[in-house]
Length: 402
Image (cartoon, rainbow, N blue to C red; front, side):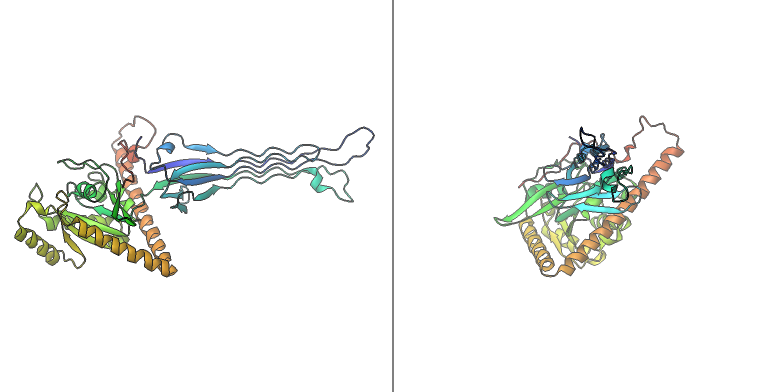
């Protein structure tokens, strides 16, 4: 199974069945009159959120789907059978966008939630419908209306409460291993994490939250350097961002400059995302003396400058991680409780998420167009007709584990 978080499909709703033109013809019954039945309605197309799915790989190669057409009416006032609706299962967290207009049709964020994306055609009328006192033998019928056809762009954004970002090898995968039962790949080379990973952090028997680890960013990620910024869209649903900084980089780079680089790339990707609640986490404190770690912490506060929460931890040794997760749980509980009591806050949050996702979509599409233009200018022959810019040939790692 591959991790695919984008797919474009075509859905066609069923066409309505046409009305029937018929007259009653039985022995010993003269002038029986019209008895043509109506047609059946065409089936509609629905997307259904399925919590057992975590990728859009099912829509990577099969991209055209059609609901059943309604049957035509028959004589003896028999109505044609309506077409069955087509149900397409997608992962929870999928956004549905009309690919031609760019309008967001809806978000599927709750297991079992249904979203109608194409309306089936309405049935046609048989000639029985047109009989009257002055028209005893009507020959009028109506055809069924055509079903809607749409090109849809599906975008999966993992549902996580806390999202981590930082340079490669900042210790994000090690951190998620330390605080949850997730086991993403950890190694001593950059870009070990190739796709988002999820873990459930359980602070006690009744309280928990979901944390997401995305591939690391580097300088120039907004222009496509490294793995680029395509995975940053998965942070748009997170309520708190954890910015992990390596306090002891192996390349002897400056931790303060590394933190600045990530903040710059985040701003280039989405201005709204930079305004999200963000906590600074200085990792790998076990590799430094206590006074050296304190000095780096003070430099971060002074030179960034930084006024938000800041933590010094060692994910490998699980030092400081318990206090951090406990504070995160308290912060999230306060956010959820406030939105529960005030619907306006919840609506404001929805608008903010929509804005971030729109900015992310616009930036990614612009980067894709730039990439395709450069490829066309170089006259590089593609091996197939499929645009492989958004291909993802890595093993899926998105999983919820406790």
